[in-house]
Image (cartoon, rainbow, N blue to C red; front, side):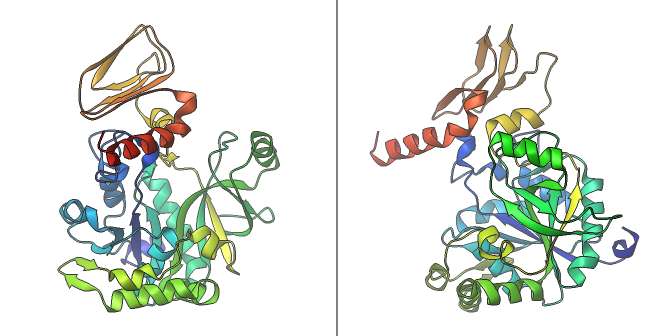
Length: 353
């Protein structure tokens, strides 16, 4: 990273608006997954702040729900906080950041709820992406796959590519069936879409003008009428509500003319389900990860409790999550269905049960 280590040239944009319902009941709208410790003593948000600290990174812009204001001001005192009054997905969030940043700043868009084990590899990938971003490309970071995952979108790079340079993106692929994922791995040149992007603020603004002008218009109006209180920018609710709610993938990435990908292997996890928490967690010789409980004569368990102590005996491959309000028990293979339980619990609350 010699060419960018000497100066702080990249402005991180940390997206912290998700609710993390697939990690219910530990993750809730009031305490979403990026603000709770899942893989150690630190929260995922604290991890991302730490790996984006120091050269070549400028103080970050954090885009988050206004309900998180107190926690974020405490955890990121050097950041600019763009606080959304309502959720509008990643497209409008990035439009806000692009409208707030200086035109020549390179904006590194990072979700707040991912785990990256190899920070040096992450920083090296950013360095490799900088030249293409300075040329006006939007650069995405493709995770080199180690199995045919069906829970991620994929990025297909065109041609073989040479050296360390960013490669041209041929297309984005929706979450595939297993046979299609296996075929993409066998073909090579396909990467998991990590949702991490690098482009100048000017490039982002032009992309929004070309492909999603209503998002940029709403973002600029919402910032123009915002209330600024120290590091916090309270985005105007009426103006922001006029923005379409759409992910940046659909609004921009699948339409932009110059999109490139930097492949990287960096111990990445989206920590998107209890299965992925188990995959990324430290485990004992029986494959158990237990905090707030114990696994006796059991294998492959994930136990997390912020409420009662949990004891599991002679069971395998379960997720057991306990809080003072709720308990989840599911097979690890059904971890993607946890949203159903979260929806049931919220409906139950709304009915006063």
